[in-house]
Image (cartoon, rainbow over all chains, first blue to last red; front, side):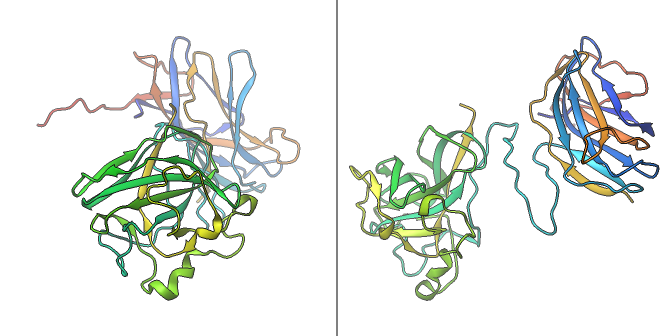
Length: 284
Length: 73
């Protein structure tokens, strides 16, 4: 949604400064910025945006996360997705984006290649490859897709929960012929309700090692660097005992999952490569 | 140079006539308005959902943004 107009006021104006939406108009604020000057402030303060309905009720109050000492000043920007910065950390908001669509982010991004890792068992019918995501917004998850460079055989995608040590298979596409060539292919549509903060394992399997997909490679040495998938305790919260595995391989469960409904954690072995499976989350 | 701060904004905030957008400074302990604080350089980008022209309000100036209408020149 692009902005149509900008409302200005140079000021300075004593707080509270109010802008009343003109009668007969209807607007949607996209972004607001103002400079709060506390040179003559009677005490420390928090810059705050309030939205008040026509009868005087406050319907939204949005404080900045930082308190300004008396005598200080701040330029404060109010916009969707923004939260205060803390040190050098990057803070990801959990607020839903206005577009209604977003890509499920990966838990870990190290690099992208479109060839098979070595040893070339990735994508072969030796097992399912999974990785952990944290759901960025609530909504309906749709269209799990992989980028296929050279199609061969069939592909399965699936979603496992992580709320118990033994994962429940929440969704499985079954085998779908790989047809895309140097293009994204939607393998399945879970049409599944997800909640912001949920942790899910996104899973990929293929029946042919010739089916090359975009994947995210970890460290080079497959044997010795597989533990890179196992994060330190508490690094990625894993509710109810599920292991902090960023990416894993399960060579025991059948491909496709078929009638299988659960996956024991003991079957998941840390490994350092992540199949790139994306999805989108919409309002419906 | 004022300290740059960021804060979230509720998305899809559709405001009809007579709603008020208020910039204020609150005491972090009591929630009361802190006197002596001023606001300047207020800028609010908006989507005009009502169509037509958004009238100026006292003290505020509304500047429409140019919209891309397609075509190549």
